[in-house]
Amino acid sequence: MQAASPSTRGSPDSQSPPGGVELREDVPLTPSGSGGGARLCAGGPRFIVASFAALTAATTLALLTQIYYGDYEVVPHGSVSSDAKSCSGAGTEALKAGGRSMDAAVAAALCLAVVAPHRTSLDASGTLLYWEYREWRRSAAWLAEWGGTGVRRGATPRLLVALAALHAQYGRLPWSQLLQPAVDLARRGPDASVGVGAARGGGPGAPARALLADYLESLQHNTSAELSSAWSSESDMRVSSPAAVRAGGWRVWAGGAGAGTVARALVAGLSPPPADVDDATRRVVAALQQEAASDALSPGGVSSGLAVVDAQDTYLALVTGLSVPFGSGPVTSSGWSQDFPTAPLDLTPAILVDQFVCGTRYVLGGSSAAAVAQAAAALAVTGVPSAVERGRASDTTPASASDPAPASDPAPAVNVVQQRGDALASHADSRGGGLASRF
Ligand SMILES: *[C@@H]1O[C@H](CO)[C@@H](O)[C@H](O)[C@H]1NC(C)=O
Image 1 (cartoon, rainbow, N blue to C red):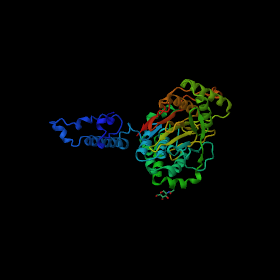
Image 2 (image 1 turned 135 degrees about the vertical axis):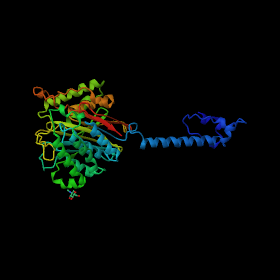
Image 3 (image 1 turned 90 degrees about the vertical axis):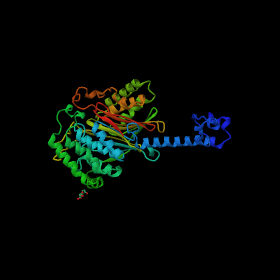
């Protein structure tokens, strides 16, 4: 360490910051007589300290510039992972415009209702899990649920009623701005990337999509506060605490009809710590099979999950779904399909946090409890978001083996955002056909 060398200790100017920075302090201190260049640096060590300070300032400035205005792929401020590239994009556009997690979730969920009608619609049931991580000492995770087998209270589509109410309270951006991507996509036509054709044929035709675009556009004239107060008698939103459990070194929160299943399966899979990811998966699958065998009515349906983390570390997982692809009811004159579930839907958002403050956290929007439990175990053991792609034992319901779901039904997908320290990574499950987006 040159900073501590005896020759420089006498001068107060020579106090270099520690850290092994390579400064040859003896050079300006012993001018070599005729060396003209060194004359420029009157005061020797002072010049070095000043240079060092300038370098530090420049580096700090460069870092801050990078953090606040830098390449978004290099320094993600937020991330949205969903079943459609265009909808993840709609979500991150909302984040870029200064929106919070709720803004991104509203934009992405409305977008999915347009581009993925085989999984969700404006009338979809939903489960939303929300947690402000930075406020973890003061504010707990909460859960909002709507739809399902509950009584329908009005003619307004239920996902829309719920999103307007949630946005009125937790959104930052104008409601009309968040509707725009859905309006544009409804006008443009189906998004081939989500594979609607693969799901039991068809879907709403062009006339229905034009009606849907008109309907969404008509909602842009009002704020979400106006709409949610006009629709308040139609809201069936239930707010509660999610199921919470410790599984090995992890804390887990899960919502929806399958929350208990997820919690018990993860405890089985992660505690005591598994030998490897296959061991964890085996234990989770065994627990799921046991649950399925003892449970008379296992939740079902089709759905689409999304995960959002914003720049303020607000975690949001939202799963919206229907009892059958394209909904069980007719398409209304406003172009959206009604859905009348007769059994509980399996809509399973989850958050996984390791035992260290600012350790690794996962936000998961998953289509089924079985898929979420297996994906979460794989994430916890491997530490890489792409672990959601691992093969899963999908048939964990022995009772339904004789009556398998049609092959055309979309497979349960789990979309995830990972935060490790301050670093964000995300992955959209290829079973859902989606793509994660960061900014
Ligand atoms: C929506 O906006 C229009 C035009 O500004 C207004 O006349 C109407 O009352 C609003 N609707 C609600 C439910 O507030």
